Image 1 (cartoon, rainbow, N blue to C red):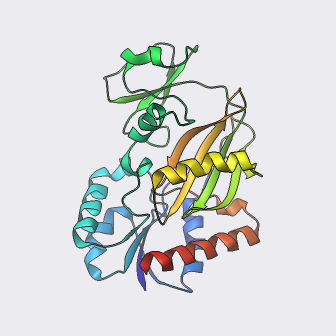
Image 2: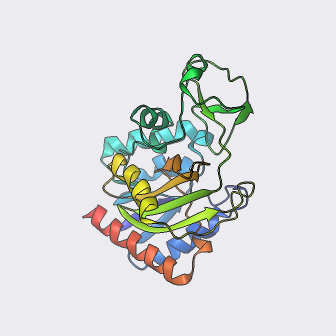
Length: 267
């Protein structure tokens, strides 16, 4: 089963080495699949070569190659080429509108608006987080007491003094592991986290909402001062997995789950 594995091995991630993770994953997936690696900017051109599917992994923020990504999506859909994760994702894969939709639907998410004129709908706080609606990786993020910007172009959220951030990692609908950053000022210094049943119920609610039958998803949340978890991001396009922080047995279990998911996805 030949797979086109999309990754940017040179992406300069702060505090992380994306390339190491993809080198590890591809070294293990080769036992079951024939793999060809390519940069995201080259994915569209390589589609006609007869791959059974395209696996999108650590390809970096789409914002940096938006035109090439849009062309790849259109070509994959037109050719009927399976893409993993499937292109039907409703979260980060489709932009940040989902944060507004989840807020409106009453999900436990950091309250979000996209129009400064609606600021009264958010909790009154000393400062608000403002970032471009089409942004990624905190690009353009600012904090201000007086948010402004064109309606529909920015996301506005109350700045929350959370206790810590925590991420839950899933393959398909199966929970794999959780990691958290005990120090909010060092968000990439992650440690293993033992989730409670309530934590897992929180994370699963967003996995269920996204309705992806197959794929890798990461549910990012923060622990609010009230003690509840609030969604920060639902990453369903190319979530970094921090596999290097896991013990060997957990990494092995993840690879087994991913391999099984890919076989099921390919039928």
